[in-house]
Amino acid sequence: MIALFNRFPTLENRLPHTELGVWPTPVDCISGTAIGVDYVYVKRDDITGSAYGGNKVRKLEFLLAEAKRRSAREVMTFGFAGSNHATATAVYANQLGLRGISMLMPQAISHGLRRNLLLSHASGALLKHYGGVRRVAAGALLTSAMRRIKIGVFPMIIPAGGSSPLGICGFVNAALELKKQIDDGTLPAPPVIYVAVGSMGTVAGLAIGLQAAGLNTRIAAIRVIHATMASEDRLKKLFAQTVAYLRRLDTSFPDVRWIPGQVEWRNEFFGSDYAVYTAEGVEAADWFWKQTGLALDGTYSAKGLAALVHDARSGRLAGQTPLFWNTFNSRPAFDAVNELDYKQLPPAFHRYFEEDVQPLDR
Ligand SMILES: *Cc1c(COP(=O)(O)O)cnc(C)c1O
Image 1 (cartoon, rainbow, N blue to C red):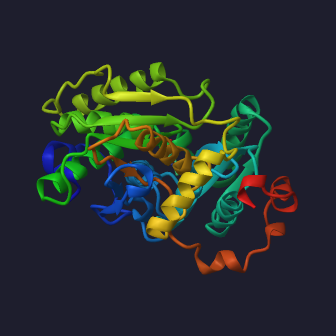
Image 2: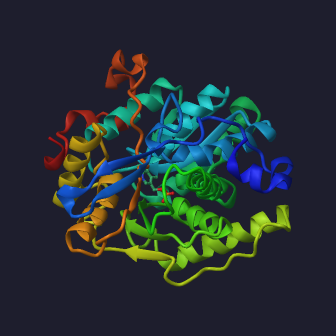
């Protein structure tokens, strides 16, 4: 049973949930001497699910269970072209007999983006490309209506990144899972968790769950998307909405409040744009690869780790063992993808394969 239901049994009957991953994800301890700390703990959310790992699997356990409960046949979600969330949704929707519909927007080109598009297509997802947020909104209305006409039901909408209060329950659970690993002696309570911030659900859920677990671990939240999409104010709102949601379902869920200082909001590792790799990120990812054999993505996890490396080098983490939450999928692409030709994708996506990847990903 997942940690959230163990700790709050009432929620088990009130929240839709289907197991997609294997829990708990392991915690590894790696040497940090090259960057100025003795050790770094790594929470292995790169291997949450066996078909596709990464942090989105935790949210999808709730969101896709809700889609099944509502008898939806399709789930529509949103993101940039290389979205790990859209890919994870396509893969696990397919596993549950649902179809993913991904409404995607332009971003810088990388190998990871290509792989995600191919995985989504191989999972039967309907992929659509729009030039910007307004066009996506119009496209979503039109596409929903068309699907209703074609198959009789509207797709269930899953917000970008899966960061609705229901999806965020996945990361409230993740913090309680970590608490159990601390109690088991897997690791001591970390002083600080480093994690990249996109749609903010990961950090919102962790902040709530850490408090519910009685841990005073801080979170270094490294913003990797535009400030118009992610801000501390919006994070606070998401935090409050999710606590209210959980307390409506189970009055025994603690009335946790936003604590200034629990989340340290970091803007300085974003670089020039979303999904544009930074030199610090690439360097941090190289160090991580040497320690673990695991690849990070330049869009999210490498920028998150760059903040940890920076703080370790500057002496801010002296005598401490930080925890890096590895949010990036490390599962190899399944066979179907290797046989795919990008020309089978809708034409709007061909340019992502025909133009060169960005310089730092070559
Ligand atoms: C989505 C994502 C994040 C950020 O999670 P949010 O809950 O959207 O803030 C971090 N790392 C990776 C690899 C992701 O795909």
